[in-house]
Image (cartoon, rainbow over all chains, first blue to last red; front, side, top):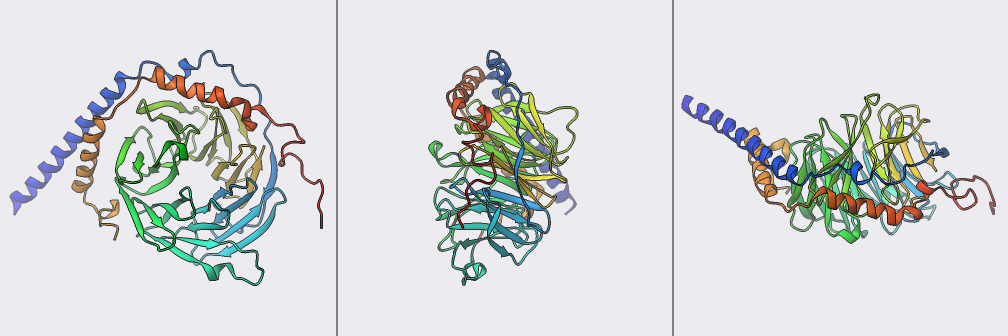
Length: 353
Length: 74
């Protein structure tokens, strides 16, 4: 019995050794193609001028921290979810609340708008992702039509409809991502590979095919093939949890935001990190990132209550936006790129343009 | 039904094996030079920049968020 224990330890040590050596080899292979830095490629690109971006709307109504938000394809409606269990649908032009539902759990960490605009999905500490059809019938109770779709064994951290109302992709504290059929609740594919909680995901733009990227507490960003369930590429350069991942508009790269106070850009075809967006003065984690329409600007919401705007090509910060009175927890650019919305622990959402 | 290999249920050894299998696959991935791919990232931006409202700015009267008020038909 004693020898069994010894054998177990040796195997663990040799596995660790093998992993380290493979990581070394992977780094070597990647380094062979690292012939220039991104900002060098962009040397002759015109520098950006001054930006004037202000809060144009403030959405007030949540009773506690806003944790997540998503835009409707109509470029004006927004769904947001909060620690107090409420999920609200807003008209961002008028700031009116159009729908509200109270979830049976607190910490609704994830919410998403269906592509049709006719439903929303949400979940959190209930370990589920549920879909609510949106109805304008005043006599109908939104909660009555609730449909439980996804079931995880730990909290739901992120969810997104695929390119139709029929399928939902989820990420969870149980370390997995999963693809579900909305109508039947059936699990279509599961994605295993993260070594800890998965905190975020983003689907590749539809033109680029069936992949998505996820980020987690294991400091890894992983790119997955939705059909096979296989991980295609993974990146481990962050020094702490990855809170947010977002594809570059062309689908050839993605950005990440992390508790290590940096945002990074990963080029999928070069298979490496190609930019780090950081400053010595920025010491709080980045909770959420998104690109402007062309991909030139990267907006990052941070735990120090600010939003930093980065020049993606040159790697420099072009603007810092103040306004929120607590952590920025969620941030998304509108579908046509005319504005972006941020949500905060200060209970509000702000629209910036 | 999630096949029992969630991170929270795996032993350290099983997690390492999973990681090793993944690394072995990835070492074999095809890669391109950053000088080529970076150039393409830059070119994409340049092709889209003129239509990027947050980058170029939009006149006050064209952006629905820039002006509150206007006509409200009750």
